[in-house]
Image 1: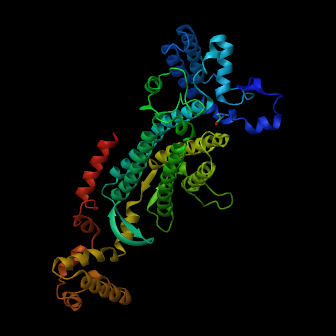
Image 2 (image 1 turned 135 degrees about the horizontal axis):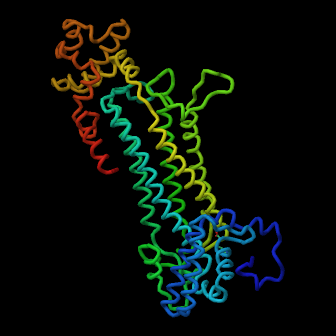
Length: 458
Ligand code: ARG
């Protein structure tokens, strides 16, 4: 173990200070990206004749060996090293000797660390988007398998109107699609290479930063060295994006939890995704979905943490920024876990069609808006139609009468525009079929949306 800055120091650092300042325990996750960044940097140094091509090749070959070990899982980080950058440097020196001492030319850990983190984010944004797509596909599959099912939909958690179950599922798919676009927006904004900005002011050596940018798959080299080493906006953005994604997963969990209660009893979550109670032998609890809701709490917590960490930092690099990593890694790893679990869970949901149908049959108030629009179609104003249907619902509920049992004469008491043909509206299938507006729950439109999503997600 050797510190990259030891020579100027008059004494060894204290053990408690080391323990407090070392980041190797968590930034070892950056090993692969650190090596990739260093390989591109070393190639550039050789190409620009800042170091000899022999040294450049020796460095690249050494790093290649380290990369293989990392990828095969045989690489072990050294807990006595300060951070991953020092660790790789030490290992390389042991492996190739003197040429390793030229690797850190025209860079500093300030630009190196943010480059590593950006590479980590790029790969993981990609993984997150894949994870969201897998969940969307799983939801789509459930929607397609039940595309004839009609369910009650709620506002204020009070039964409101009926919709196709697939329409409800596609609402989730839409929400998740926005999460993907937020993540890819973030990707676009972070895709500028910080490496070569050095400590903060750049280098007097003739580097070619755009060459490195290309090697590492960045759009181009960043245009301001001070901003490059200070910028952690992309970490805030990812965590904000994940907070929204997790909030979506939590809302979906809440729907599933409600539907799985005996009171609703619309769905069955397979045993493999439930747990029991240690005291109540009859219980089958939806703990996995509950934990999905619970796990979503950490993201807004993380967002506050990263914003608070950054908010008063003067330009440029400050050591506080080291603590951007635990919060980032935690958030990314938790989100990937949650997506994996939820994708599988959706494949383990059974729809209890009969129970849902029973619930629909018991209640004609689902169709009050349909009756209103029937009246509007006959020239009645919206206001008047609302009043008429309100009166009908009140009388029926107070008298314990079904709308469908009203005679033509009784109907006419509410409005001369009401005929017995209005009763054909008191039917879930009719209710979805008569919807015409784009984006509604009309079965043909929902089928078209199912087909559209199938094409997008396949
Ligand atoms: N471990 C440090 C971090 O994560 C690396 C950069 C250290 N730079 C420095 N000037 N001390 O931020």
